[in-house]
Amino acid sequence: MELKTKLEATEGKQEILISRVFELPLELLFKAYVEPDLVEQWMGTKVLKLENKKHGSWRFETTDPKGHVHGFNGTIHEFEPNQKITRTFEMENTPFPVQLEFLTFKKLTDQTSQLSMHIIYKSIEDRDRMLELPFAQGISLAHNRLEQILTKLI
Image (tube, rainbow, N blue to C red; front, side, top):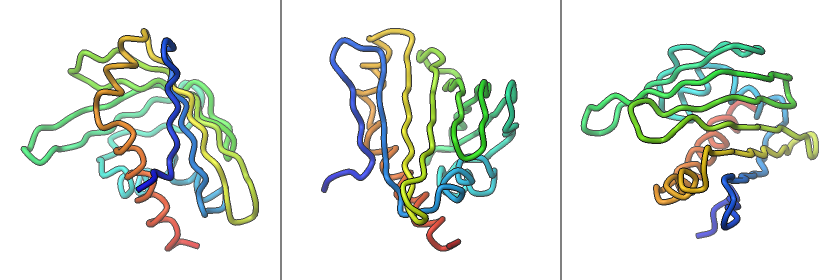
């Protein structure tokens, strides 16, 4: 089955480009990334902090099936409602260094919108290690949940 979320990882570059067209109005798609209760629903994580502003910070926790708690955190560098979020992303207690994420939200029609993510890693090796994980499938499944949950709000 083809994944709706498209992932592009060019050999020899330290970045991943991700894009997805959603059957959701732009404002609703953006809310999915900034309202803690919505983030918790589609990401399956606990939102401990989410300061949606320039120089704001965020922190999430996820518990795996074995009961281990995994933390994720970062800083928001740019925040323009319904347009873009620039942030760092760190998986705590892992060998992965902090990555930089540029999220861009675009209205296509009144009922469709697009999310583009440009993720930059410290090195090509770090990017390649991330791609060894079930990264593409995971983000696509999360985006599928996002669309399912938010479609009910239309």
